[in-house]
Image (cartoon, rainbow over all chains, first blue to last red; front, side, top):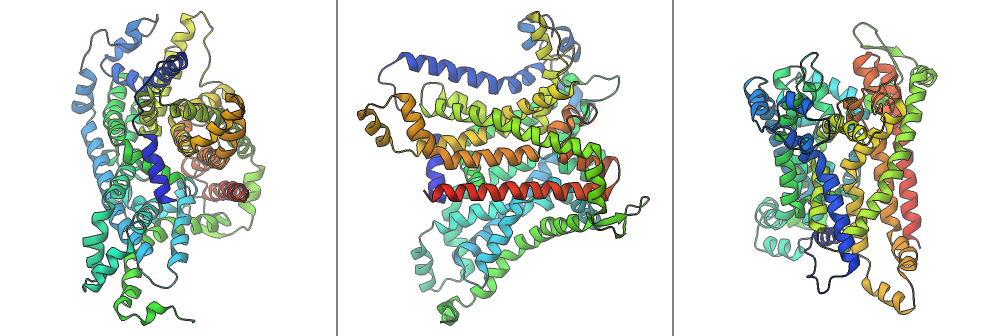
Length: 297
Length: 300
């Protein structure tokens, strides 16, 4: 199933064959695809363009419907200035980066270790344990939110960085992905190394790990996107505003009484979204692989 | 025969220790942060809580469940959850299939459309909700401006309960359609082309081929997409919290939002736990039906 998933994922993003003839259906299809692209890209592009308008202009040029409803008539960076020099958004951004880095690093370490053991090592109850750990993939955060809050509070971690990344750093998806990747390495490689007297850990480090780089890239990318986009958990566990992450901070700009922050809100949305979307599209080979194997269990 | 041969293999005996050790960090993390809170959530649903310090102070059996089931706002949340599920399935599954078929043809523009869909999928729920909030805003929202330009009356997109549910579903569909679409696209590309060639030789038209070849071969993926969408719909939270905060009058609040409000806005941990356990049971039922449906497919 795993190699299947990978080859399908690669097929999805393969380049189209060169056109040999142009048919009418092709023209309609291409127009349809263009409409699809516009529909899905529009909200993000529109908010990026709006971030270059002052809050006054956003309101002023919305109606009547003209080009200036969408494009900035007087492009300005004042929203970004407000974001970084008045709203201290860089702190929220730094918190997001630290939380994401923590989650990615721990997820890579725990998932590769467990994935390798489940794929290659022999010990009692191995498969039963694997199945048990995979069950956690079906526990929604919404269900365990309150007791998880109590657990983290009990550890004295409310409003700290570990509270942001520790609870989700051990990932059933990561263990599953890495197990599949290690299983696809030929066993003969291990056996040959073992005959040469290599220890289990040496085989893991020198032979197995270098052979699963694409799966590692997928794991890093998916975990990064998940933690970067977290909202509900940070909303609940971070009570000190200076420790809050960017997503929650931006949502806070939506409802400041008597003080419209539409401009900075669009700027914040642009800052957290454009790099992420760019990474996902550029690395779509790994992104699609990760999505496919998180969906097809 | 009782002992596997590897226990006698001295070079691999070390794995008996190293194996569990390598699993330990992940297992420990999942036990502390997943299994333990899950157990506590289930226990809490049978407990009473001190109203002042919110500590458990005794057992009430099914009292929390009775209280929650008798609560009109929970009943409403339950039906709203079902409406979200139905609407998301009706909107997302056919459009995801249509998009997958369009992208499968590999016409010019495919990479552009795929990039845009993946971009929406990678953006966060919070960001998507904030952008769509600006689109749906009454009086100054983009959609309202477009309505006014075409001489249509203003619509209470987020202030009318029924319309707000639809608006939340459309926003979620925009963001999440990529996942079922990728699954369908993968299944479409796995269909051997010779099946279509053979059907063409037998005189089948495009419609016949879709109904007789594509759809039957896509059924496992359709079932998978269906249940992933159902589970995503049951867990819908962030768009509700940002766009309507469950309002107006709780008309957009589903069970996930109801339990969040009980726990963190109204400080009633007992009913909150009872409602999440019921949500979990609903998800388990969906997953079991999914597993059944998938198994009966592969049996053919």
